[in-house]
Image (cartoon, rainbow, N blue to C red; front, side):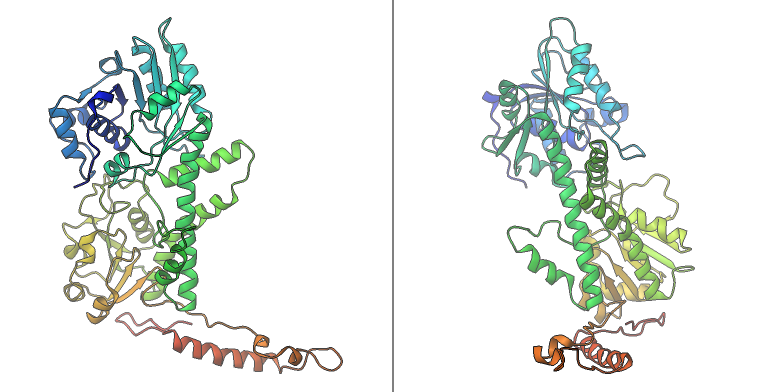
Amino acid sequence: MIPHPAATPDRGHRVCVIGAGYVGLTAAACLAHLGHEVVCVESDPRRLATLERGGIPIVEPGLDEMVAAVTANGHLTFAARAEGGVPGAEVALLCVGTPPRPDGDPDLTYIAQAAREVSQAATGDLVVVVKSTVPPGSCEAIELICQEAARPGIRIRVASSPEFLRESRAVEDFLHPDRVVVGAADDDVADLVAALYPPGVPVVRCDRRGAELVKYAANAFLAVKISFANEVAALCEHLGTEASTVLQGVGLDHRIGSDFLRPGPGYGGSCLPKDVSGFRALGRAMDSPTHVVAAAERVNSEARSAIVEKLAKATGGVRGLTVAVLGMSFKEGTDDTRDSPGLGLIDILTTSGATVKAYDPLAKVDGLTVERSASAMEAVRDADAVVVATSWREFAELDPGKVAEAMSGDVVIDSVGALDLEKCAGAGLVVYGVGRGTPVSFHPVVWPPLRWAHSPRDHTGSDGTAPDTGSSADRETVAGEDGARAGAEHGGGVAPSRHGLRACC
């Protein structure tokens, strides 16, 4: 159970929240829990009906209990239109989607429409808070839309307060945030917005453009950390060492930190891909290069193909294989499949000629073109190979012996580091990971012609020229012998499997 700050009705404000998605419903429920009077507006009839029946239309731990509690005590109600929630409100939160267009620019159509409807419904002065992720400068444009739509004599002011909620931890993140960012043109507006949040949390106050940029920059940096971890993992695979220990050694430096410094099938979900794309679009618009973020995006785009290539090396090719893919949500604890690595892997595998059976404990995928299994064990039955794409606990708790007995092959690609390698090896499974497990490639470390091992005087003759170190063939032989010794030391080479392919240099 998440420890929640106590409700404080004496500091409550009248709030209207537009949108009952991950951000909007979480914000509405948490604000109501904190003692504010909240109306959440949801225009989708099916979602609204679910909410009015006492359910919630998303999967988010702890949120259903909180929604039930605050609707029961009357702090949270729902409406279908802005007219049902805005009149009498002091603050309106815009929590609607800003999906990327094909060129990477965010689509601001929905938020502009929401701003217009809120302003038309306002019966008094109102502060509109943009929680959706928008490019810097958007709040100023939204304020113009609001003023144009509002009735004569009503003043609409717009502030930015971006959300930093992690799916599957959204309630905890709202009530116990690392920081709250408030961007406003007026101090009284900033005070009002800051007062919505739990008392005592760190508040960063800035102008609106700065607040808007914070969200893009934060998610872009997280994407950089994930892609960096994948690059380190690739080097570890070539060197025959463990990425987990290398990255642990890096992440324990407090200047760097361990969060998001973990290799895998790349980032996905509703935020990072969209915000990386938006960050780059902003750079193009400002004619300001975004080389680091562009590189992270490129590394991420290659991550899933690299996993399928690893499977191909381990099995001699994926065409004709039956592959079980475990996990279709973009991360554990949610049913969200937006930009899911698992679905990306399924697409690559089917395009490459594999037959795929897929399983996920929560995700509901419309239009899934492959067989969906009812359980993980059903998915792995008679599979030539297994790919673990989401780190659900139930996958880590699978009995390796039963998995090995059910499979027709023995190759497992654990792209998320969920499995116990020793137990899997004991059951006869050959597990490949990202920077861990059985290597599919090992390149001996060669420093030709090993000059670093000689004293400085050995590097030049009496006439100042370099000494004869032998033919290039001799040097390659020495380097190869040294590399072979290094490979033996680090466990280079791979045990045979039922598919025949293993050792690689």
